[in-house]
Amino acid sequence: MRYITAGESHGPELTAIVEGVPAGVSISLDHINSDLARRQSGYGRGGRQKIETDRARVTSGIRFGRTLGTPITLVVENKDWQNWSERMAAFCAPPDDLRREVRPRPGHADLVGALKTNTDDCRNILERASARETAARVAAAGIAREFLAELGVEIYSYVISIGDAFMPEADGLANAASYTPLDIELSEVRCPDKAASAAMIAAIDRAKEQGESLGGTFRVVATGLLPGLGGYATADERITSRLGGALFSIPAIKGVEFGLGFEASHRVGSRVHDPIVLRAGEFTRASNNAGGLEGGMTTGLPLIITAAMKPIPTLMTPLETVNLDTLEAEEASKERSDTCAVPAAAVVAEGEVAFVLANAYLEAFGCTNLTDMKAAIRAYKQRLKTMSR
Ligand code: EPS
Image 1: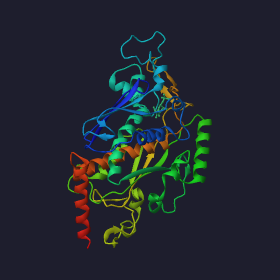
Image 2 (image 1 turned 120 degrees about the vertical axis):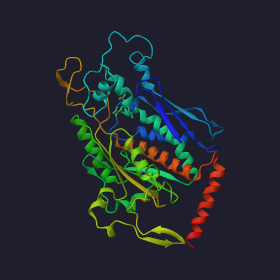
Image 3 (image 1 turned 45 degrees about the vertical axis):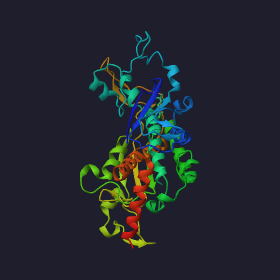
Image 4 (image 1 turned 60 degrees about the vertical axis):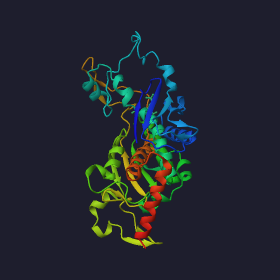
């Protein structure tokens, strides 16, 4: 299952095409739109989210609420296009008063993108490098999520820290799979701890006052997985590397940990590895420090991933840059932007994880339709039961 997105941040619309989806998967547009709304939410977002109400429109691949097994096209309109139609026109001549972006922002794709593509207007870069693109990704990921839901797999995320405001975690991994969507989505920063949410909101307010931006960390959890997804035999079948690659494809993600992550490197082995036990006639683990991954495969325990996001590069108190026209030192440009987008990035990460897991299922049990696939999964589960009896 693959997706590709197209579209500029201030163009008419964003498009996503998803291919490789088996026939017969039930799709709810409400679920996709609710993910799009979750991506738009989060304390610390900028003015753009007040303009947009992201909704997906499906123009191919679905009939009567079920996938046809053909490429699925999803379109998300950019309402802000109305304000940009001249500056972002596909074919007319540029307007006389066009202001080129010549003060690249440190930390954004502006400068390197302009050098790479030989342009004197960083807007040619930033329009696509903008995290607005992730709206199309979330719409596309809705298809992978619906497919996984049919197989009993659920994915959610929550924020652990924003700036220096952290959620206290006595045993973060043991608790990771215990939060309900309500615990998370009722918080304006998508953090299940009330006191930590308040501290994060205060940190965002302080940053905004100072013209600063903030990053943070979040966790993505997937439950209901079968053991043995991915593979141990070759580099490219190891699901750990695929998950890492998928998470690092999200703008501003700078670190990814699985289970204990870096913490495992300074513990002795017996305090890291999870004892194997038989419970109710099934192989399982006494703990889940591995975060649901062993040898490049899922163990069947919850998949637990922690990711770190850097602060957004657009600063209202800008850093120094070099003007591309005058080659003089100047302040970097101030685009309208977010103070913090960690809660939104976590929703995008859920979608990236969904694509990797959907593909792992397709590789293990791949069929052109959901009914045959569910039968193959039942046979696999039956065999697992026989092995533990
Ligand atoms: C975003 C839309 C953008 C930014 C933000 C994310 O809208 P605009 O540029 O029109 O204000 O708010 O973009 C970035 C963080 C970025 O780095 O470019 C969105 O819809 O997520």
